[in-house]
Length: 402
Image (cartoon, rainbow, N blue to C red; front, side):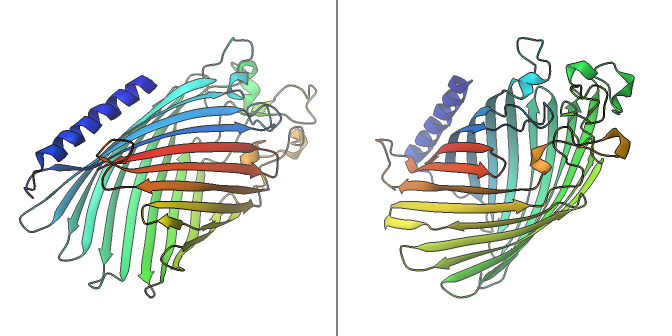
């Protein structure tokens, strides 16, 4: 799969080189603006797998690759038309998913490939300072299929100091139901769907933002991302162990969660130019939803220009959430409590987390690594640690061809 991705990247790269050599400046023709190639590797370890009821190996490895191609042209009224095409492929292996059916050599979801192409169009009216756009997306893996669409609008003031943006998106998803092996065919599972059936999960989002330039050094943005989900929101193969079941080592039910969820994150972002070399980028978000989950996120990134073309940006993020009432650790749910909903997924528990790392960037109009059209090279590393013991590492490399 990696060979396929690299082959496509090489193809787009040579397209870009050929176009650059052509040197056409005809504003009526579609031209390649840039090609972006991103590759990443993610690894995590922990001992709170929801697949095995909140206790068990959470080891996960994911290799991701994506190619982004941006084309544009200007019309006779000096409006700009931008087309963007992206192809992404993730290849992962999961120790926890392999426990869905431990009697097999390897469960269907222990390793999988996710493919996600997308296409977007943006119209920019340079005279009236507004933009209109829309796009379509698709994502496919073994037990999951998603179709998405979005429309967006933005409007800037005449002086460019204030901008309002709005983006509405919808994702129409289908799960293939995979139950833990010991619950398949049982009538007491209290689960709406049977093994192998398809279940919907739809998501609707409206992202709103206002950005204001306060002065030459400070820019502030106010953000809101209203979301609503409906359908099968619980994960069928995540086990729940009840402490008062006659066989406490046997999962009586699969995870069960409400079939709808309303989300309302509100955030503020501020960028301050401390000097010609240093920028302070800060972000805070408060999250609340109808499952009574409340969370706080605070981020700080400090890009520093070593030279006009080389920069390093250390960053830190703190996150805290209170957990939902439906969550309890393995064995603490009780049949005698007659709970409507229950989960032992530690993603919905109370925890705090810290993430820190750095982004290193090199830019050159003359090219990098002997490649004339390679404009930017970025390397990014992040380390994540959660209070319940989950830890992860993420390494990313991004190349921009212009």
